[in-house]
Structures are given as C-alpha cells and as structure tokens.
Image (tube, rainbow, N blue to C red):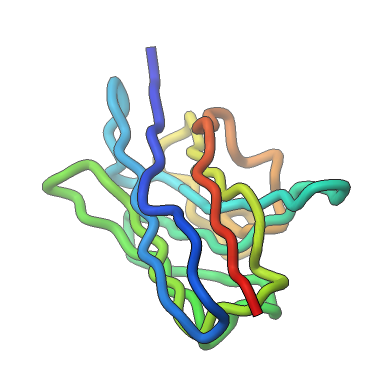
Length: 131
C-alpha cells in the first residue's frame, strides 16, 4: 500500500524558513509527477509546487515563486519543499501528493494546478507563520 509521510512543519515568524519532506513507501519516486499542496481553514486546497522526477522539471503557483523550491532526493525516495521568506498567508496544512502513473511529465500535466494528476496523498504537516 502506497504511503506518503510528510514532516518538517512547524511554527515560524514571518520571514522565516522551513523545509518539508515527504517520504514515500511502497512507491518509487523515479519518473513520477509529485507535488505539494496546501489547505488553509475555510479555503480550498491549493497546489503549490510540482516536480517531474524524470528530468527535475518543476512548476510553482505564482504566489510562491522565488520563495519555495521543490526537489527530490532519490536515494531516500523523498521529495522536499524548501520554503523561505515565509508569510502569514502561507499558513496551512501542507500535503504531499504523487501520481500513480510512470513517465508522465509534460509541462501541462505535471503542475500544481492539475490535481487530477495525483492519485496518492499524505496526511499533511501543519505550517503556521506568525506576523
């Protein structure tokens, strides 16, 4: 059974940094579309960043460009989300997501906006940014 486990969330002040990690089990991250999503209370789930691990291509929602970086650590079957210059509006539960398909990395497919690309979801890790 595929399992995605997030870690690294916490409480920081505005301007601070956090690094989220997502470890996959019963699932190999090679040549997969994987992403990070977030959901704040009372708001819809929002895609934040996506990576196609086959060629390291990445995409981001406009609100985090230049501040967040998604990456893979293949040896640990893990993806990360490095977040800097955090703002109070980044406060949310952050979820890792993964595609069941292999080799689907098109620029219109593997994006944070295409939630249909993701079949597996983690339980989430909370990020709270205070002003």
